[in-house]
Amino acid sequence: MSESIDTKVLESDLDKFTETGRWKSLKSRFRREKKIVILVDGPNLLRKVGKRSVKIEDVDEIASKLGSTIERYIFLNDQASDKLIQAMVNSGYNPIVVRGDIYISMGMKTMEIAHRNNCDLFLYGSRDARLGPMLMKLREKNFETAIVGFDPGFSVLLQNQSDYVFQLN
Image (cartoon, rainbow, N blue to C red):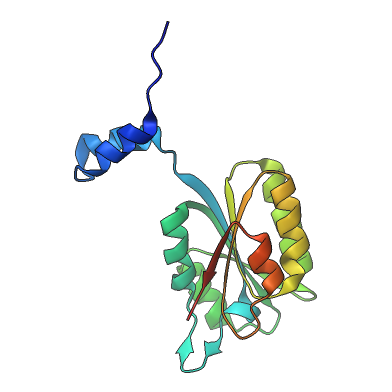
């Protein structure tokens, strides 16, 4: 008969040690890092808010606190400059330039990734309520969701439907 180990007690004990070497390795065996896919609504999120501009690095920083990123996509409209597209590629994002409604392309990409079932959490960068049905569908399929946005215009629907909400100031 095998003994059961209370991993919560073990994790808290390990937290007392520095996260280097074999302790970090042992701790990671008990606490699996979430695999995250980031999907950013470029025209809606990458803009100036008051005197502060929102940067894609803000989204990356939030994602790093939740787990490890396995895929990154940014959806841009057809008016995006070549410099912006190149900057997104340099930041590690796969730019998807869309001629029509960005949310249709985001929905298609979301369902493609969900069908592959190789991630744990979908992190969206947007403020628009049109993402609400996607969040509901993902939760039905037992995926975790997170939303990154800012006021004014940060949809209450998105905030209520997401497991994690991050508001940029």
